[in-house]
Image (cartoon, rainbow, N blue to C red):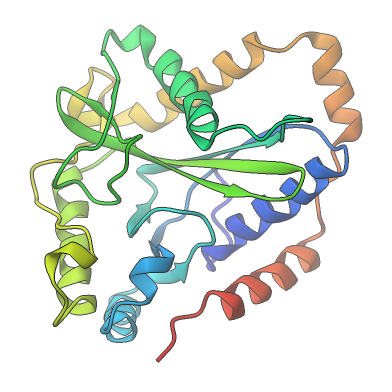
Length: 263
C-alpha cells in the first residue's frame, strides 16, 4: 500500500490481472491493498462518452494520471486518501456463482473491518454519489465505497475503492466536472448524475480521525488473517509467485491499448 513509485495507475490493475491468471492456474487467493497519489479512473461506459477524450486531456493537464479500467463501474478519482482493495479468488467448480455473491464477500470484509468503529455499514445504491451501483456501501446515507468485478475463466477479482480520508464532497465535485466535459450533448440517462452531498470519507463519517486509512487497512488485515489457519497461510506463501515488473508493464500496455478512449 505504501509503494507509490509507479506513476501509471494501470500498474495495479495489471498486477491484479496477472495475479488472477495465476490464481486460475492454482495459485493462492490474495487480498491486494494499494493506493495511487493522483489519478482518475474511468469505466468503459465513460470512455464512450462524446467528450471523453477532451475530459481526459483536461484531467491530465491538471496532473491526474488517467486510465480506463477493465472492470465494471464508472468514474472514480484516486489519491492517497482512497484505499483500493482487490480480492482475487477462485471460481466455484461445477457451477457459476452470481456476481452478487462475490460482491457480498467484499461487503462482509469491509463491514467487519469497521465493526469496532460502531458504525453500521449499509449496502444499496446511493443516488447522486459517483460510480453508483447496487453495492454502494454507505454510513448514514453517505457513500464511502464502491465495488466492481473482473472475471476470468477460472478466477475473478472483486475490487473496491474506499474513501478513507479527506473530503468526499471535493472528490464528487471533480467527478461532476469530468462529466460536464465528457457527457456534453448527452442526456442525463447516459451517465451518472453526481451531486456534492452524497459521498463522504471514513474520516468524516466515523470516529477514526485523520489516520482513518491506516486504521481501516489494519482492521482489514486482521479480519483476513482471522479467517485463515497458520497452515493455510504458510501454504499460500509457498505458492505465491509475484510477476516481474517487466511482466506487469507489458500487461499495462495491453490494457491501455485494449481499453483506450476512441477519438
